Amino acid sequence: MIAQELITHFIFYTFCLVALIQIIYYLYFFRRLAYYQAEEKTIIHQHPVSVVICAKNEAANLAKNLPGVLFQNYRTTHEVIVVNDNSDDESKYIIDEYKKDFKNLSNVELVQEAKFIAGKKFPLSMGIKSSKHETLLLTDADCVPASENWITLMQNGYRDGIEIVLGYGAYNKLPGILNKLIRFETFLTAIQYLSYALAGMPYMGVGRNLSYKKDVFIRNKGFSSINHLQSGDDDLFINKVATKTNTAIVIDPEAHTLSDPKKTFKNWIRQKNRHYTTAAFYKPKHKFLLGTYQASSFLFYPLMALSIIFFNWWMALIVYAIRLIIQSIMYVKSLHKLNEKDLIPWFWLLDIWMFFYQLIFISALWKKPNQNWK
Image 1: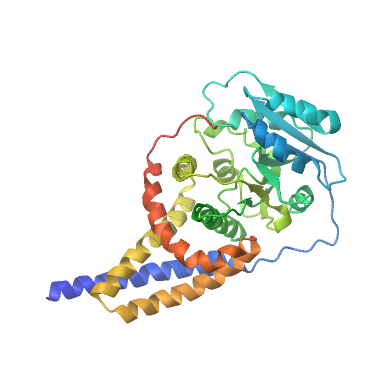
Image 2 (image 1 turned 60 degrees about the horizontal axis):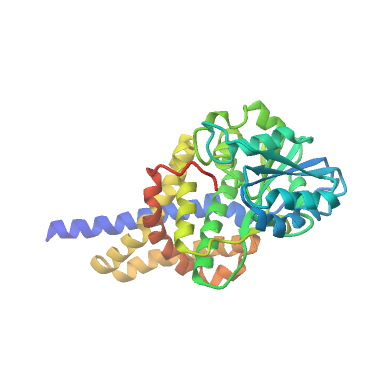
């Protein structure tokens, strides 16, 4: 009897500890994005920008999305480079058609696979190498800028000392529960990497919407240290080169990029498995902070259920209510900031779903990824 009582008390106190860890993350990290206000610039300097897009068999996406990149309200010199990576579809002809009307569009045609360099790091390196300007702005062929002010707003993130600007790559709002699941997971990823950057601990960016100086790329020898990995051209590269003083964020909704999410669970799982294989290569402090938060998220609901059943239901619900109130404030404000307001009524259910999400994707921590980036 005494042993059973000790076990139930242990479960409840562990639940309280896990809830406390979550609250600390909400108040120390996520509060920074929730209450973030961009610094107002009295003088705006626009510098030449090179937009780099890698494409592999992306004819349909190029036809649909490239005009959004080309029709930008940016009066300063800028170029758009499409790296056509061994495509065997109509990509080259679509690019050539657009080049007739847009003199700032150029293409790099790759006709041979790079040996021993996995993922899209080689085509991206070729695009960066061919770029004319110091400021690079990266996106994907399946993305379209949310507005014609995308280049301007992302470029405005630079000031003295800033070499990296992190943006938000959103997904289009479509009907269906899968769309909400994908967008909520994307939001949770964003609230972490953007908040950590604001806390002076940047650890990743997303290649759908990312900018950095060409000198940073050259100075750090490009992707040479991660060429053997399938992913990492965005998160691991930023993890290596970003510091508390050289990184800024831009979250204006007009500076987002938009892309269509996967239409099936199977394709989404394949995509996320590929992304999660890079987490093991983060810096130790980032792995510790991210791992602690993920562990607390994973344990929270099982411990709450056990505390309700075996300890004291109303005390467990009080702990849940305190955590939910603080979580609600941070999530609601951040969902507004990232233009994901329609997820607000659903976030508490989607948060419960994340327990099952972690169960599904935990195998990615040791699974060997496919070496093809498309």
